[in-house]
Amino acid sequence: MNENRTETADCVVVGGGPAGLMLGLLLARSGVDTLVLEKHADFLRDFRGDTIHPSTQDALADLGLIDEFLALPHTEMSHVTLRYRGRDMVLADFSRLPTARKTIAFMPQWDFLDLLARAGEREPGFRLLRRTRGAEPIVEDGRVVGVRAEGPEGAFDVRSRLVVAADGRDSDVRAAAGMVPRKIASAMDVLWFRLPKDPAERQPFVHAGDGTLIVIDRGDFFQVAYVIPAGSWEGDAESLAAMRTRVSSLVPELNDRVHALELDDIKLLTVRLERLRRWQRDGLLAVGDAAHAMSPAGGVGINLALQDAIATANILGPILRNRRPTERELRRVQRRRALPTVIIQRVQRVLQDPLLGSAAASPKLPLPIRALQRIPFLRHVTGRVVGRGIRAERVRIRTAGETSAGLAAPGPQ
Image 1 (cartoon, rainbow, N blue to C red):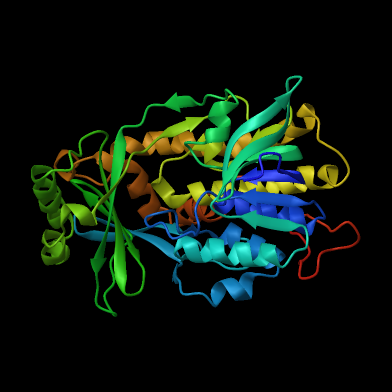
Image 2: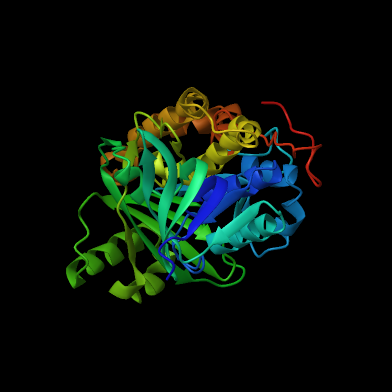
């Protein structure tokens, strides 16, 4: 091990998730020498966000990657359906979105991340170091000037104009920098599991009654999320039996498959809603889950993280090519992205009680659902909020010379 090893980059991004890889790709395309640190050797972790919204697909089109994306195995959903007490209805319709594609795509996150990594590696200014963890910021005179990293060959320093913490809701870099998120009470957790399916079998996306079940059609299996009260899962035989009974009552046709589940088949996601008061300090910026951990409700977490990355590249890319950004310039990213984050987190908090509600206590359709059924236009409103998001970002990056090859003209902001 070379204890004196030092790497340099214009920007070092800690974390090779959706936000980190998208940001690394965008900055490299705009002429910024960018190093992405990813602590794992690959992206093969199951039960991660795999919802690719229409606004994200627009960004892929801007980057010239949409055809490569659509060639990967995926399924699509043009509207969100709900089965409530045996009655089927539509919650959100994407058909009128001002986007090129009007469907949500479901794709294993590792395939999506591999796509971004491959695109990045085609750029001369992009480097991805796997099995390398960003441990803590390097601080000199109160300013972050790089990050200490740990890789297969030992520890080393990376000196940079900017460090971006994109290493998730348990961010090591954020913690080492003393940036503590404000926690918002969460009333729910989620159990994730897979169930086999017949090729022609279809299920509504949402089943509501005694709790809520989300069923994602992944082609040859269903990926299922079951919402439970926070802290109620004990991970024992009694909890498993109770879960089987409740899920079977929600979707009787899944009964045999649910009762075949074992404890090892189930993954508990502890839901956290939190966000930083300040996303930045001099030389350091947090984005994605490191800045704001989201509930899985609506599947919008990955979309918000990607929108953060696009906004960061749009704002800071031209600056990073030439110099280190000031703290005031870093603050522009939070000002751009704070409103969508706050609104979505408030909506997710309001949704917690309905997601945990009991059909027995609600003999009538809840008022918002009744309104969606009586006023079809509202389904397009919910479709716009879910599918495009609030303050959707479009890629504005340019290379140090002209427009990057493959970039489409950016759409309206």
